[in-house]
Length: 500
Image 1: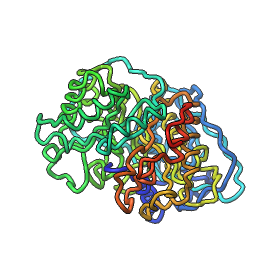
Image 2: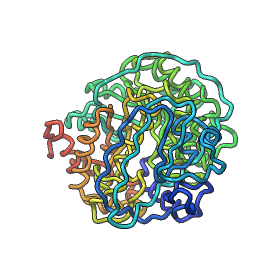
Image 3: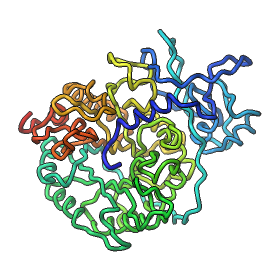
């Protein structure tokens, strides 16, 4: 993504809620043998209920209880099987007709499956089911990756901030360390750095690495956007996209890993690849194609420097929106179904909060607002669903890395574009509180390895109209003075920098 566009996902979900239903029906709440009626997909917020307990893992061999919003294809993607196999194993003549509470046999599955959450007694209208999930994509022909089996790299917990390196990088890194944080993330746009095959301009990356080394700051590079020479000829060149040959990307990240024996500590392989304008255009998103890229990138990075942490590209928080976006949790399941397991050290995730406090979920609204409610993608705690997908696929020993997360607050800065309207519903005080609480909540889970706040210093270089809400998400002012959020995060680590 050129810049973090949380608001776009809200618009996408709203679009999905006002268009015709997708062909496949979600699981319904009809009683066994009764008429099956697909629930309408609307933007009606879920009624406040008690906070549901976190799903726990219970060993079972091959059974799953259908939950609200489930589809047969989504369940198949989650457990690495096919819709046809599920139909055959359960005697289903119509894949569109499954119901909440129905127990399905999962052929060939022996891993730990989730225990269904108890159904809360509603105090008002029932919550809108999540959008249906598309079937796992069919991967196109691609070069095979050579499997490697280096040890998973572990670093403990990483407190990080995303920086804009072109805006006084030394001052930015000083603010990172003054707050007690030890990691900085920078986006590396491949298209700007390799004008032709092998002709890499190292100046931009050298500047970041040298400045970070001088302050003992660890670096995460998020490497994105193929140059035009590497793109497929039928690309939509109006948006970024992947290369025609994944090996070209692998060669670029191998060169990075080799060029910096120290100084680049982690590489995120792409960014928000479940979104049309990050993966080559409408209808191009395909988890199988992404996994092909991930496999060769992982082999290349580890072959050059086994100590670099490889993070899978974080999907954007989204529901299913036609040919524009794939539900992020479903997409992670599709990655596993396509063979992603074993080709990363950590799973990237972008948990967003919009106007919701960190502890809220689709069944709990502790605010006075009714917008951006009901679908998991609007809630910070969506990362818990990622964790469940990982456990289901035998990856419970891996950590989640929040390579981007934050809350936008327009107060104290020019209001951003209208699609970021939720930024006017968050005060600077709530932004500060939400970020602090998000760290506390995530760390308490024990399976989160890193958190990178979006963003530190994009405000000073933001567009005058804050078109992309860079200023609203920033934790400093345009003058570099700390906002309350920066001071709150520093206090979390026992620091009180100048201006706090």
